[in-house]
Image 1 (cartoon, rainbow, N blue to C red):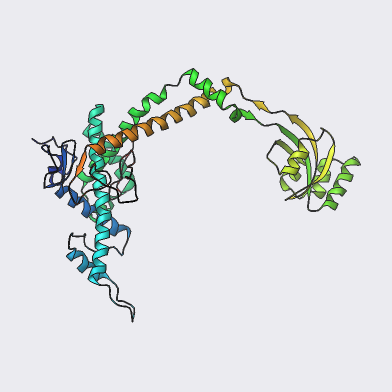
Image 2 (cartoon, rainbow, N blue to C red; image 1 turned 90 degrees about the vertical axis):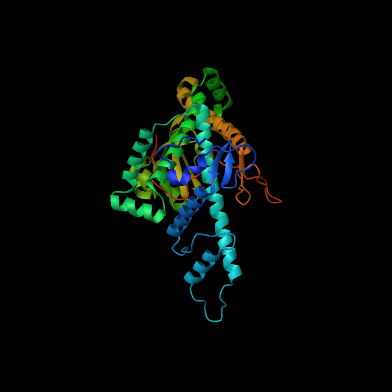
Amino acid sequence: MNRPIRFLVPAAALAASLAIAGCGGVPSGDVAKIDGQTISKDTFNRWVKVAAASSAAQDPTAKAAVPDPPDFTQCIAAKRKDAPKPVKGQPEQTDAELKKQCSDAYETLKTQVMQFLIRSEWLELQAQELGIEIPDAKIKAEFAKARKQAFPTNKAYAEFLKSSGQTEADLLFRQRSQLLEQRITEQVNKSSKNISQDEIDAYYEKNKSQFVQPATRDLNVVLTKDKATAEEAKKALESGQSWASVAKEYSIDPASKKNGGKLPAVAQGSQETAFDKAIFSAPQGKVEGPVKTSLGYYVFEVTKETPKKTQSLKATQQSIRQIVASEKQQKALAAFGKAYQEKWRQKTECQKGYVVPDCNNYKAPKGQTQQQAPGGQQQAPQQAPQGGN
């Protein structure tokens, strides 16, 4: 008995992959079985071609045929045909060397495609468990919107399909996977939106230092290149000349000079150590300096003092709510992602020769740990227009 096939799944390519397999190992015509659902070798091989087309589109030098294991005869021949003539004195690559290149390319494509197909099926199965359904009309509408943004003309779209080796049904399949991932994430995040007052209070008490506004001082300043000029400026100020006139004559700081020497709201800890210490130890209304800094020598006067202040819980409540919600979402997604990976990996068995880290029968090479899969959907082998919610 076959699992129902949605209109958006390429019938010729994916029909066999959705058949319900019997108990035991992976059927000979399939590459993987996930909780009874199988992925066919025909489906795998077709997406390998798509992935190879993607590589060729991104790298003009990657024109070799799709790797054909185990002998890679066609791949070797194509690589030899496309290879530039060796520099004089340099030997041509051997068949063994070209075969190694084909084998490495195939392993990369195999892992990419198997991961894509397996995780697409994980999303389908998880969505079923959560009761998530996405109408075909929604998928078509989102795809049409994304296609319009990505391809201004029908010709551009047709050229993309040709170069990528994909059909519109392939792109709709991927659009569906993206929407399923979004809906699953939304369900996981639902509980994170409920933030209690106790959680807000606890965060505020634990992180009060984040809500302290530092002390500030308003200043009049003159900045000079050397100490002697700073001393002259200071004498002029002490003789009764205005800060505006002295700044205009002596200062090399364009901002405060233009503002009559005024430098407002200097926060404690925002200046170089020596200057900061001098500012916040100086009495109000007295000309101080010169103080040496990396910019030059400052002569200054404190005109206003504002002590540090801790923002109240009431004033910070809304921002705390957002912070706590974000932290809860991250924790919820991390916990779900870990459980999701473990659960579906345990239910994923792969055919010999097609085993990748997402398979339960995968064994990590000696000295390496089992590769962890991301919690979400893997990107398909070729970029395509994809819409949002």
